[in-house]
Length: 229
Length: 113
Image 1 (spheres, rainbow over the protein chains, first blue to last red):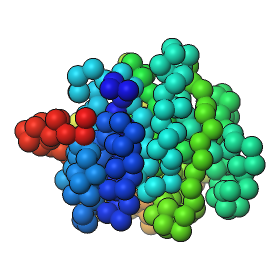
Image 2: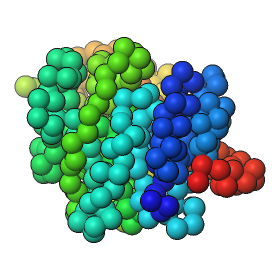
Image 3: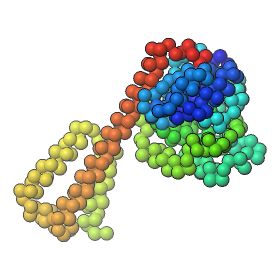
């Protein structure tokens, strides 16, 4: 447990961030909040909750915030696992331990949370959101060949070795598809674990709007990957 | 499809290939220089546009000039977009370094753990 860092990318989350951090800290996790240039009190809320805070001077997007959090976690002595966790309270802090288990046992390099694996879970996801996620999942499966059920879930766990191998360059939301592509490219061992996503009016208002799917496609198609060695 | 359309389409294909494969700052500058020189020549000898247009089967020189203007605009958009992307990437790297250095300087690594 001491070797795990929970990375929480946050933009304008002053309403929720302290509670989210506190809940994670109470379970004993090390938490780093990457404040993505929020103009509000996100940083101070995160500090009050007991997190280390990395504050980006300008808003870059969730992908860049995650990369920053990864860099921070890798720079800390003794880090073995890194978990990504959403700042808006939609994830259950108790789920972190279940996500790390396959890494700790050596069964996987990457564990992805899926909101569709739980029995009866599909009815909890709003219909339009479900259609979009299904489409994104289908595209991801077709392009990477990974048999995943949920590709845009913010709850993920990685070994430090897996993070070092992944080459991530997407600044904004297309990073989710990019992570999937990198897992496939390096042949990382990847499993899914069921996680519950609590859709509250706050998290729905804060999170991705459904039209953002267009921006994700745009980023994926028009941003060339960096040259590969 | 007539001969001129084939010629123009292959010109566009060549242009796309240039954008994807051959681009470099030096080549870009050569392209700009070449286009500027062509402009000067056509100002001095406006009737040449008609002659070249006839050869390509386009008809009027004005149309040929317009087609070249479109290609020039595409070229300019492409180079500008590439520059912006590079700047965005550099800015993002820079911002991340600033943020991480700030944390290291404050010794915030002690927190959160």
